[in-house]
Amino acid sequence: MPWEAGLRGIVIRLAIIGVIALGAFLLRDRLTGGAGSLAVGDCFDVPTTETVEEVQHHPCNEAHGAEVVFVGDHPAADDTPPLSDSDLEAFVTNTCGGAWIAYLGGIGAIESSAELQNLDLGVFYPLDEDWNKGERKITCYLYPINGTPLTRSMKAAS
Image 1 (cartoon, rainbow, N blue to C red):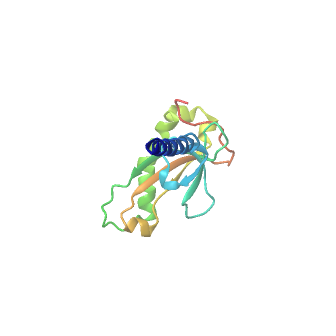
Image 2: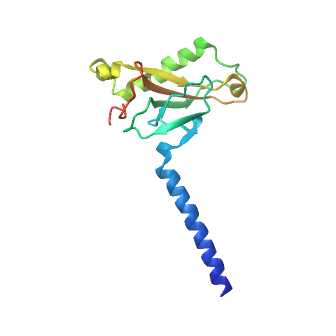
């Protein structure tokens, strides 16, 4: 019957869409994605280019170069000019610094661990042209100062 063929076609299409969605969900940690899609706890390789559009995600239990500790919007109004270097540094110190310390388990955990003392803080922030269009997302991440890849999450609870 014609309606059965149509129904079968719909079911097959839905199954294909489901398989693709499931695959994307399961492989998210291995896909290249926009730097703007990073979330706290994501592990990735730090790009070597000055302007970052995409990053290579990794599961945190595999070799990676960085881990996100903070994602948030800068509170500046839309008509505010792009941040100066000192304004960006102040925001990173005051906002990302606290998130970094908390993510690692506090000052005591950092002071008692040579591994944690080898970590520094990096940041992705909007280009001036994107800032002028209203983009305010700031992403802060930790990375090893000595360049040795991380092979586990640095989150205190991990």
